[in-house]
Amino acid sequence: VPAGAGLIDVGIGVYGGANGPIEEGASVGTVLGAKVRFLPPIPMVGAEVYYAKIGENDYDEFWDDPGLDLALDGNGLDVFGADLLIGGVRGVPGFKWYGIAGVNFVQFSGGESDEEWKPGGEFGLGLEIVPPVIGFGFEGRATVMILGWGETSDRKLWTVTAGANYYF
Image 1 (cartoon, rainbow, N blue to C red):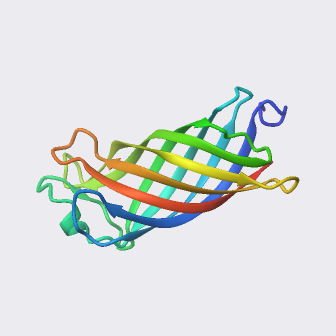
Image 2 (image 1 turned 60 degrees about the horizontal axis):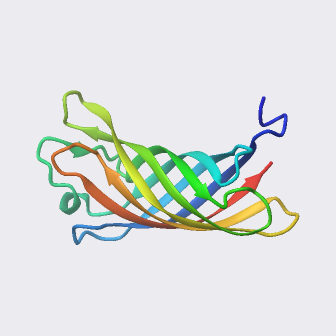
């Protein structure tokens, strides 16, 4: 209802890029995802929820906690999350830098149950370019993802992505 009344701008987006571990020497992998962005009338603040598929790293080298393993489906790792965006995030024309801080949930196996979702976090920086009139934004972002906060071995990934957002 608030989006229909014009109080909140809503955008949907897709993105892709690369990821890699910060601490270890495992291989570089891929990131593919989709998101929904909410921009309230408060200047300089936004929020988004997202799904990402992180794939094709050498996770045996990357994750070495003997009691808890990343739950991989053969194609990678499923991540759900929510981010707070601070900076130039409105869907108006121009170049807009913004900061990113948020939480994510990653599926693990081998813990207290067969499968469980553990919270993590992320922070980073993004740049969106919105051309005049067309309603699209093109963005690039770089983040650090922390998988499984509070586990015996927190692991961090860097991600670099590029994508497009459509505002309606």
